[in-house]
Image (cartoon, rainbow, N blue to C red; front, top):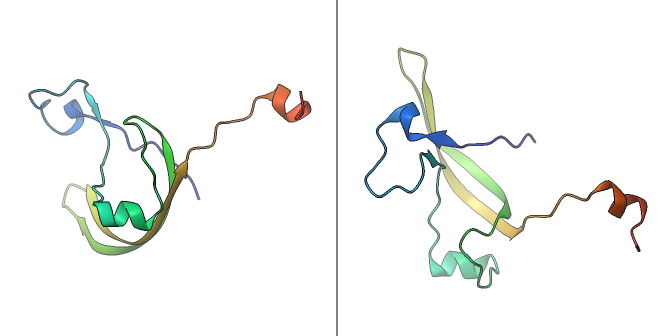
Length: 97
């Protein structure tokens, strides 16, 4: 599976909303308390990067005459965990050091 950055800038699609701190934005997903508890997520700080694995179902797919496409997904099941930090060469060569 290929991970790709989903970052966009407001200039790509529309004007920057009032109060936006940055010109960048990402797709977002809202989870309620029951869903958070089901995934076993404890308290996390805002800004914490986590890895998500999910099974989804395509609920809609559209393509416009100009060739742009959009897709909606239903999340069937998902799990979250803290994002693993990439190991540097020294920690790989000397795991106990």
